[in-house]
Image 1 (spheres, helix red, strand yellow):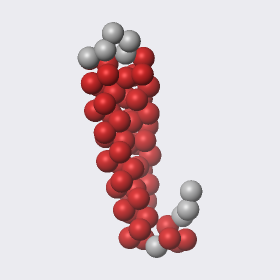
Image 2 (cartoon, rainbow, N blue to C red; image 1 turned 45 degrees about the horizontal axis):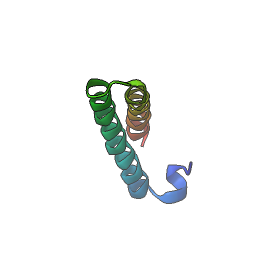
Image 3 (tube, one colour; image 1 turned 90 degrees about the vertical axis):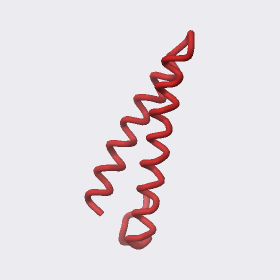
Image 4 (cartoon, helix red, strand yellow; image 1 turned 180 degrees about the vertical axis):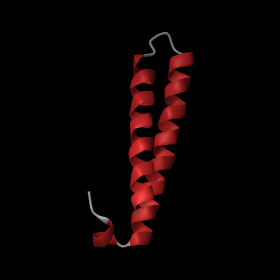
Amino acid sequence: METESQMGPTRYRIYMILGLVTSLLLVGVGIWGIVGSNEPILGWVMLIAGIAITGVSIVQLRRA
């Protein structure tokens, strides 16, 4: 992953915000998969991945 100094602060923040939006979509689809499916394993995987990526994106945004 490129650092902020390699790509510039604005571009770096845009990438982090896109990651945050994508992770929130994963959380939403994961919840939908858990509630609306007979086999909710993929929903749980997406929910956990979304929560993990959300946490990393928030930490990186606070550092930037």
